[in-house]
Amino acid sequence: MSLHDDYARTTPYELVFQSRAKAEAFVSQVEEESSGRGADAEDPHAFVTMGAVGDFVRGLQGPDAQPGSVHQYGALAFHGLHFTRADCPLFLLSTHVARYLVEGVPGSVTDPPTPAGYLQLPQHLFWADGGGDAPESVDGIFWTVTKRGVLHTLIVSGMRPDRPGLVVVPLPEAPIAEASQWIDAQPREELVDFATLMPGAELDHLYSFSTAGEVLKLLSRFFAYADAVPNGLTESVPGSADPESPEASRLSFVRVALDG
Image (tube, rainbow, N blue to C red):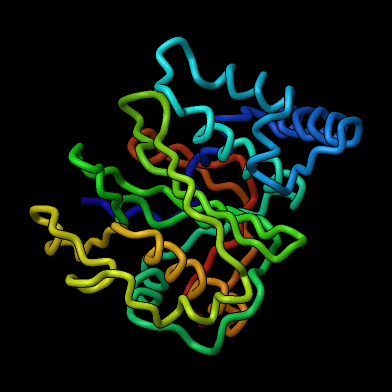
C-alpha cells in the first residue's frame, strides 16, 4: 500500500466549499446573521441552528441523508468557517514525523500554531474503525480553538477516488488548557495506542484511531512538535500530480518534516 505524502492532496474543505469565494460568502452570511440575532458562531450548538448554516447543510446532505446527519455536516461547516477565517492553514504531516509522533514528542505542549487548521495525514497511514463496517483511511483532522479556550476537533475519512463523499466524525470538545495531559495519555485499556488489527497492517506498519483520546494525543503532539521544531515546518506551494497519483490540493500548505 502506498503511503503518499509528497504534496497536500485535495482537502475536504475544497470538496465541500469548491472555492475560496464560496467559503467566504458563507462566512459573511453567518456573520451577518450572527450579528443580527446574537447567535454565537463559536458555539457549535448555536451554530447549527442558524438559517445560513441550515441552508448550507441541506445543500450537502442530499435526498438520502441519514437522521442526525445535520450534526455531522454542521460540524464540517463549523470547522470550514473557522478554517476560512484563519486563512486556510493546511499542514501536511510527513510519514517520518507521523511515526515519530506516535512514539513520542519533543518539548511540552503549547498553543496550536494557528487558532484553526487542518492536519492532513499521510495517505493510508491512519485508519478509523468502521464500527462494524470496513475500516476507512483517515485523511486528516480539523481543529478549532475558540476564544473561550475550547478545542473542537473533527476527523475526516472515506475520501476515495472511486466514490463521492466523505465520512466526518466530530469529537467531544475539550479545554485546550488540558492539552499537556493528552501527550502521554493511554486512552486504550488493552491494546497499545494507535495499534490496528487490520489484516496485513503490519506489512506497512499502519495505525488506527479507535478512541477520541488517540486523536487528541496525536494532535497535541503535533502542536508540541510545531513549537519545538520550527525548522521542520516549510511553506509549500500546491503540488502537481500525474494521473496515477492523488489529486493535488489547490491550497498552499506547510509541510511538517524532520528538522534537517
